[in-house]
Structure formats: C-alpha cells, structure tokens
Image 1 (cartoon, rainbow, N blue to C red):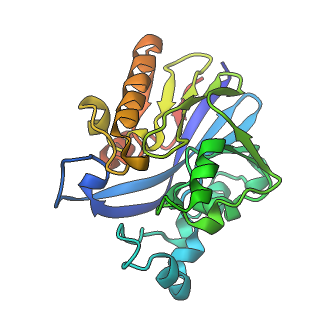
Image 2: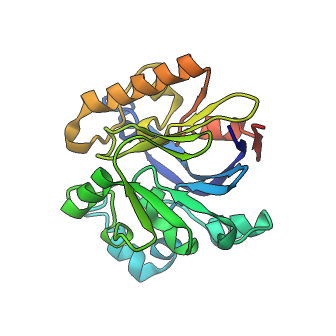
Length: 258
C-alpha cells in the first residue's frame, strides 16, 4: 500500500462526436475531451499511466497531413501545444524523464501511446493481446510506428502486481488488451484509473459501452465496466473516467492519497 499521490497531466484536448465515447447515444453532440496521462508517485518511485499523443505528428504539417488524413482518420486532430508535452509537465514538477521508473500503457491508441518518444529510458508495460491487435493493422486508432516493441518493453498477459499497492486490471472491450490500474494508498481512498474502459461518468453510471469496441465486442466492454464497478464497491474505490472534462476539472492538481 505505497501510493502517495496522483498528478493528472493534461497533454491535449480532443473535440469529437460524443457517440465515440457512448455507444448508441450522443450522435451529433460534439464534446471536448481531455487527453490525460497520470504521474503516480509511490514509495519506490514514479509510474506514468499513458503518455498522450506524439506532438510531432500534430505540430509538423507534413506529418499531420499523413497521420491525420481525414479521408481515413475520421476522429479529427487533437489540440496540443508545446507546453502540454510530457517533457514540459515533468520540468514544471522539477523532474525529467530519468525520474520516471515505469510507463504503464492502458492501451496502444494514438492518444495514449504516442508520447513515448518524450520519455525515453523507463521500461514500458503493455499487454500481449494489445500488441497482437496492433500488429494485425485492424485497429485504426493505432499508429503503427508507435506500437513497435523495443527492448525496454515488458509484455504481460492479464492481471498482475505492478508495484506494492498497484495492480493491473484487465478491462478489454474498447481494445483487445485494455488495462485499468488499481491504486491502493497507505491511507485514504483507493482509486481505479479506468482508462478508456470508461471515457465518461456516463459510461459508468449508465453502463454504456465505449463507441469504439474491438471487433464490436460490446458485451466484453460492458463486462469490463461492471467488473470495475464491482471491484470499486468491494474496495470502496473511486473510479476515474478518462476523457471526462467535467471530472478532470473537478480534480486538484495533485491528488494526495497517503
């Protein structure tokens, strides 16, 4: 039980049709969603949950046109400034990439794995099913150059203990190998970072699947939401949705847990 604090990092914002977050509802309603990474500080070091987008693909016109070609990439381009890069966030906290011990990727979509280049060095945790799905080319939200495993990548199958008090929870459905993260502090309330298993509070409250589900496995996505809610009830944990602007704005800059 070693988690001390969580620091939400706003790495970009993305405007898109709400139905991409809530399957079967919200068509025609454009929402502004935060693209977040979370710096988790615990007794033995620091973990980043997700790393946001690749700034170069957004800032460079040629790369932007290639990777975000609207004829094939229908979700639009996130808004991201130089100041929102992870290097800048870490610097404001008096840190560098060398102060991060581990990167945990909830999944490999462009807005969660793209920023790896800004945090060289730490080992990267990812699920085997996620890598295999990315290699298949069937997930249009994965940029192939961001899903190439390197020697610093560690590949896992299913649930495991990341560090004392920090557990990886399988929550597939949105993607093949999606993972959420369970954070238990020495004192205070346990937190579950849902990742894109639940973009919005609405996904949790109404048990609505994400708009995008791997192979249209809505049943799997709903099972994951219900499983996270069950764990939350049993452990009195607070479930954090991942792309809910109202929820993000309700959080302090640093959430102290222990």
